[in-house]
Image 1 (spheres, rainbow, N blue to C red):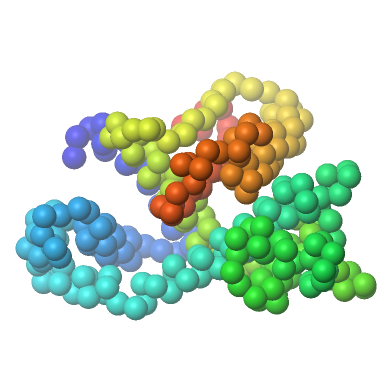
Image 2: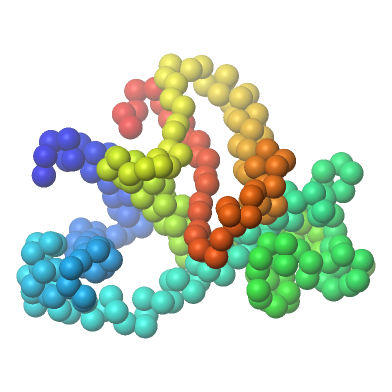
Length: 275
């Protein structure tokens, strides 16, 4: 490992290792997990061999063939689909909340999200919201999850009221999945740019040091509003398939399906606390 890679990995690992120590996860558990991830990522790499042999995986990962064989079986087991299924549900709930809080047809004249009936013919109902958010799941299933997370409440008249403009899973295990997905995609974007792939992904940040603590305390709510506005406008453009108010040309809407994630983060600490 070169000194440059070592320095980069140390910075990436420090907050992760600190969090694991706080949760009682020691080195041995982390070592075993690293072996699994090495094999999983090696299996995902393009290879002239289809599928890649255990010998090839051993050469790429530095893990002996016996371990590779065992870890490969684990990676290809049905259990690996559980996390994906849970994450799909979390993403759908988040997309519904984002659509409800950003799409003009679900906001009133003040810009606040409208209260929605579960079903109905007036257009202001949850079924219409699910279609706009491109979520093909029964309304009651999604409503149950949003109630469980505290994102919505049911009013006395039976209509649904959105109480939070962003979705946060209620269960700690699901919160960790959300965190892993967000940070994982951020890292993949950064490493793609590091490899010089084009077009580059958005991966930028502001950095200031020596700022008065009181100033940041006062500015933080404003920065939060800017972030919410940015994400709201981006989500509205994605829902409408439009850019700057102009519909995309037909050739831009093809049958190729992709996923994307756009995020904003903020962190502050003492000026002498090294990153």
